[in-house]
Image (cartoon, helix red, strand yellow):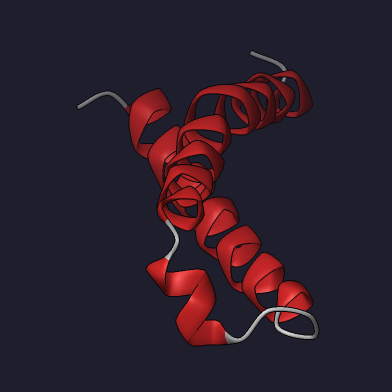
Amino acid sequence: MSERWKYQVKTGVFWGLFMIGFSTWYLSGTTPLATQLADNGYYFRAVGYIVFGIFVLGYSSWTAKKRREGK
């Protein structure tokens, strides 16, 4: 696996897991955790966060990193 993909996956998965945790915590004020976990939309949103993190945020942060390094 190339360095770019390693960086993208590492960055994207971290961001996705953070967003899953944050959204679960934020919604826990109105929806109990058991109800959130029973809903299929929760898992769809979780996969969406991770995919978005890898492909969009991971790529944009990789290009920004390369610009900072001057490559």
